[in-house]
Image (cartoon, rainbow, N blue to C red; front, top):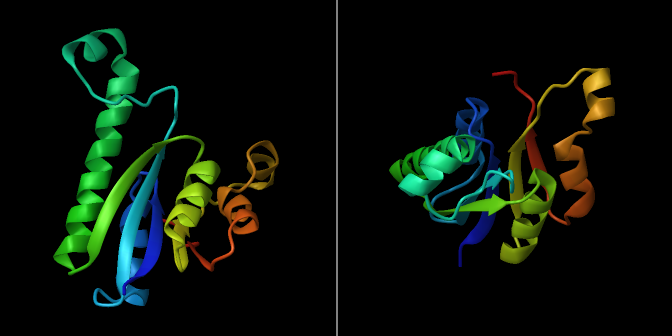
Length: 146
């Protein structure tokens, strides 16, 4: 049975580093990878039609970016031989990551770090710290600046 690993991406260039960490610490024959991307619920669309493009241009751009980031992540993981699936979750990142981790009973979470200054951390506390406080599995945080 494959051990579930969750990779929390945000669609930024740092996501590539998280995939590389998964490749470094996980094995395709031992780990099932779930990629999670939280989408702001105000911008989440179930489908993008001509109506949504016209009426909600910012939301359609956000949705396209999320879909593209997810597709690229899954393609890269599959190239490396991993069995993987992707989930776009319309919620706050902490809630999305922690709930998906519990849902799949994951053995490891791989996520990034935003490198905020003190004021930034005061105004917008660390997502990785909040996730660590809410889950029971190990969390590998990539602290490299990318």
